[in-house]
Image 1 (spheres, rainbow, N blue to C red):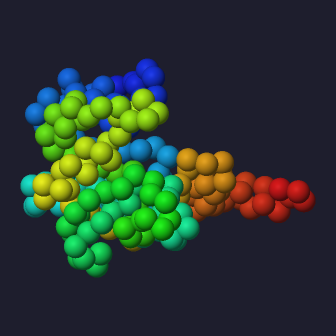
Image 2 (image 1 turned 180 degrees about the vertical axis):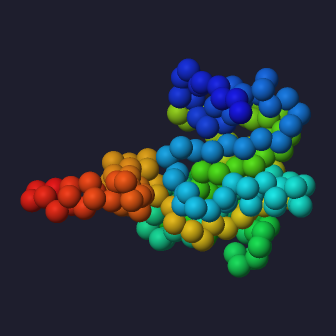
Image 3 (image 1 turned 30 degrees about the vertical axis):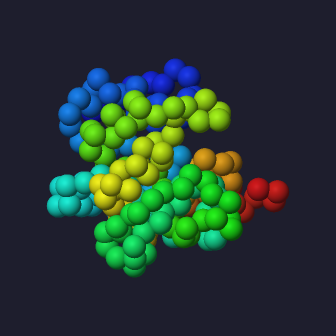
Length: 190
């Protein structure tokens, strides 16, 4: 396993480009650490199997409450019940009234190396960032991107409340930590 460091926050697409020399012409996974999936489910392994079976890039999708979709990239697909999802396009953090669906992209990607060439051609957006979603949208419009729906437990640890919830929930399931969690939750003011 290799990792690279992005020295300046210039977007997820830029972060992927930072790893281009390691990727070469191989498929690769992008796993966002602030999206915590149920550790008892090997969903990334399932995504790799889907990639190998279909031969195109795969993103993890999950239905979220409508009021939350503007925090994520949203999926427009031919049939939101299909497996895998045949994605037509992606919209990064759409306004609620413009979201094509309530299926969000949730931080797991298994990608063909071809996405690197698309990322290299993208112009930075308004915030000076290169967005992975923009390159994936191009793949989707060419029929080279599908989605795999995740139905398990997931925590958005990208905010303080989600980070705490993930830690408490998962610690409470461990025999060695459950008593500590119970004690913390039982304290007045905790």
